[in-house]
Amino acid sequence: MVRLLIIAFLVFSFGAAVIAQPPEGKFTVFTGKGQSSSIDDIVKSLANADVVFLGEFHDDSIAHAIQLEIFKRAIEQYGAKRRVTLSLEMFERDVQTVLNEYLAGQISENHFLLSSRPWPRYKEDYRPLVELAKEKKLDVVAANAPRRYVNMVSRNGRDSVTGLSKLAKSWLAPLPFAEPSEAYSKKFKALMGSSAEASMGIDKILSSQSLWDATMAHSVAESLKKNKGSLVVHLNGGFHTEMRLGTVEHFLKYRKNGRAVVVTMRYEDDFTKFDAAKHADAGDFVILTQKQPKS
Image (tube, rainbow, N blue to C red; front, side, top):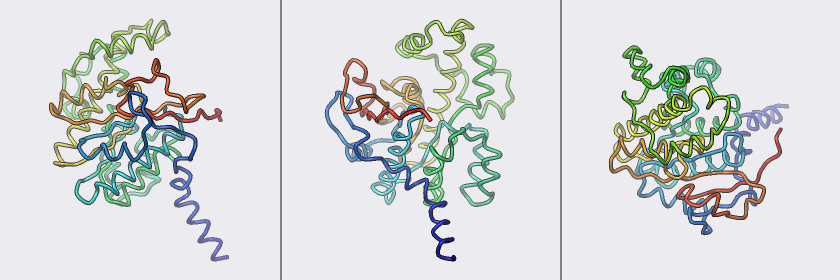
């Protein structure tokens, strides 16, 4: 009985990390030009990088497993000489104190989750990375702008946040945050098309997206400023960083000589084929994963 209880504890405690191992034969790694590559190549490329942006489809379980693997290997390869930091779109800057308290062991995981507004699939998708950072005593950055302020900009425009308190502004990129580039604006408007959201005011929605991008970029830049010579592994939705636009552009404004590696992960029916028309230059590396049936 005792042995069974120990086994059950181990499965419960570490099962998420085991399940999250990248499944062999269900993804293919390419360079942005379509040449065959590997996770090893991605990790090697981080030797001269300040940050790696891992862009995902949020419902891609294979991509989440790959993110964990890249984070693990970054720690193994560089952790002895450089501080490795995890940065997440999935937590907002106003819960950084709560996140820090959990990482320091001051509060329980239950209270951490009750107070930090985790994403619906946090346990399956992001918990393994946070727990690894906690085990290794690494920083985790709550990188995103509070959603209520992003929504404020989408409804009332980019200047609406100027009336916020000093504390509230500290949870955002420095104001005024930069306008999106022409290339990013064109890409965003093409994505939105004639959607109901776009009909409500596409320029305001684009501004809210820029606040989102800028705040994540500023969070990464501030982490690098705080920890000289460190390496940041940042997770975000692929649109924010693909083609080195959006968050990457804002990052290079905050850190003029910043060195970023962009990895874009997408699922495809045929994940073994690199379609240049769809994937060329989507990232420095492009990982295509096997499309999973919806649960």
